[in-house]
Image (cartoon, rainbow, N blue to C red; front, side, top):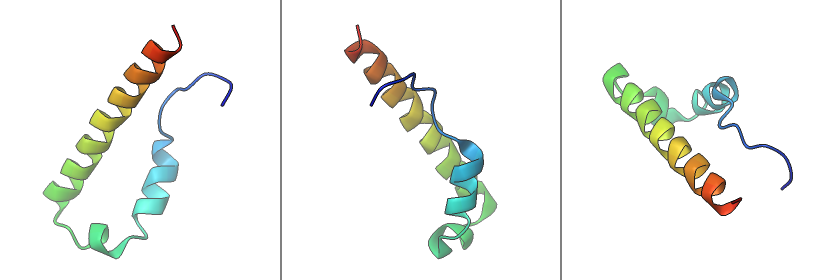
Length: 54
């Protein structure tokens, strides 16, 4: 892939994840944990990709 990697499109993720029954049925505090986990994974990916491009 060419170009600059800038991270997730959170609006698109929200649209997609809202269609997953297991996610929708989670209590709000656990849904928040899912988003925090996604952010951690996103930062890790961006870090690795940045290091690989050097």
